[in-house]
Image (cartoon, rainbow, N blue to C red):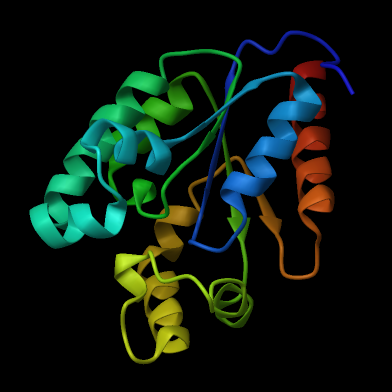
Length: 178
């Protein structure tokens, strides 16, 4: 399916790890004929190491600085679907940059669903704890106020990636008509 028309904005997708930001973002980008970018992938490319190693060797504050620089740079483009790292929302400057040229879509999911989706994943430094489900609950509670600062929210618990993407595409279509 090609783009219904040129979109002179970005779609920033926020949410917890396991919410589907990257996979859904790729589908949305494909459906709308937009470029897909993933802030975590760019950080790993720039730093030439994976996020777990960045956290271990340089610390979370360093990672957040690099992440903020990258968000500032990529948010200046147009016609992009930007899958944001789960903690991007913690920095108000990131939100300001992302909103300046687009909309922010939050993919929400319950701690139980997030836990189920990430059971096999061992590359998330914030989840390297004994009780991952409890950690999801803690992080979600800590970040909820930041995640709620969005233009559109999709509860993904009972949706496929395609259904989630379709809801975002429908929202964007409504935004373009106004």
